[in-house]
Length: 311
Image 1 (tube, helix red, strand yellow):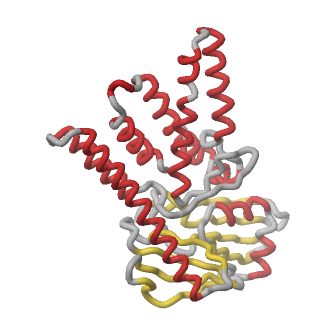
Image 2 (image 1 turned 90 degrees about the vertical axis):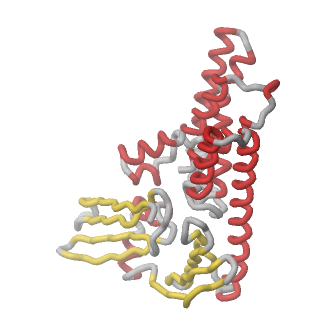
Image 3 (image 1 turned 60 degrees about the horizontal axis):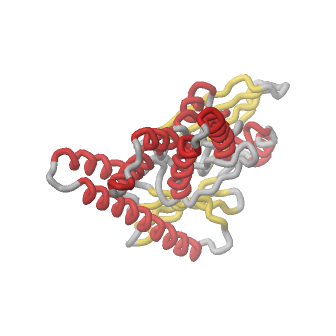
């Protein structure tokens, strides 16, 4: 989901490179191709289903798969043309993917770039997926290069400086709010700290303690706003724990949501399971709710997903 901001950032960096070090259009195209590759997984996400996105390991995000593919292409190019310079260009898509991964580190998505060896992911959670504000500013400045007399290098410098300031500000706010929240619950492990608005001036903090969520909003300057609310994470502890024994349900519960709330009830010898996000998100696309039903033999007979988008 961070493809656009990454492509804009690379465009501005390339715009600052001296003409004597000019990168060919073909090389730039391969670099942008690597940045766009992760969109393949999002396409498969809708064609195959959300459950694959969370449980099957990602293909186009995978540095392992992409390294093998582009490494073979580069090797074949070298065997055919015996030109190391041309062959090495076919590794540029991998460089583009790594740049995309760098932007994802600051984001809020759980993306296993090391699949299939590991489904683990690392994220700082400073910026909402999509980088909406930087993308808007980049777009405005991009148009300005065509309709103003300001030089392209000046605008590129301004755009990249704004991006660095935005990420730095988000990181400082995240750290400060984390420290403030620890004063209320020093014994609890924080579940998430995510921006509550697009400007990222208000943040939502959620922690889980003894089977219940505690959440509140924080302003980056004013501190906590409002009371700390409490909500159970499981509607029926025994039935919910039984439902989570199913590996598919457990993975969806752990990976498809930031702060999942599970509700279960049994009707006509069938177990109805609903997993939903504790609080609305403001990301480009996120999962509001998953509804499942298992019959008395334990087979999944209903699986429905409801999505949300930018509020």
